[in-house]
Image: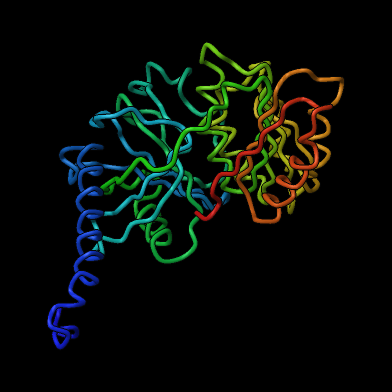
Length: 328
């Protein structure tokens, strides 16, 4: 390893050893993080399903063996141990954190999805959930995510079971409870960010007075799938308003047939207008504080940042901007 600098009689050895030791320290810390999530990391069994209509993978990972509490807004690197290149890892934001118990035929009416929509291969009644679990929503593209899709398709209609090592947590939880109104402006798979926070924001002692989710999505099937599973608990919560902007589809007639799903959100067949959303939150002489959280394409994030900056003036309510990664 030091052969290429040996002619300098050790003068440059520190320049080699410092990055090597830094790399080894990083590997050691990551190993400890993996073991903190599950001391028997090789035995973490995740369930993978793929919804073809929504073009989305749902990965459910049990967290009952974790030595720490899973926090909203954090992200994890996951590695599939079933494959040859098991060391390959990719980061994903936690979408939901669940503490529910077993879902069987006795609890079907409470825990089953509101409806079956499309060829999803989703969890069916009779599937045993762990006491605690977290869910990732992943768009399949190529390489790692494509292999996840292939695992799910091989086992359809049942969920595919794979062994995973989970490295994390990374990132931090935003202090959104400090605000009286929270606006989530997200696009596509960026919906994972509001999903991650909604449970805490609606159950904590310091609840915001108002939570608005503005989600721009191309496929109506993707929106329906998330409403049917991750957002079904928000039905009837007067603090939460869900707005869905279909940028490629019209409102599917199948959606309107299911009143429960249809009235869970406000549907619009047009593009999301960031300026109108933020100005609407500032209307009526609002006296509280507002948090704007964005997770979406670069153009959406740039526009949100610009609009918030222009309205950060003493004459308007306190408004702060938070941006979450949309790189995965």
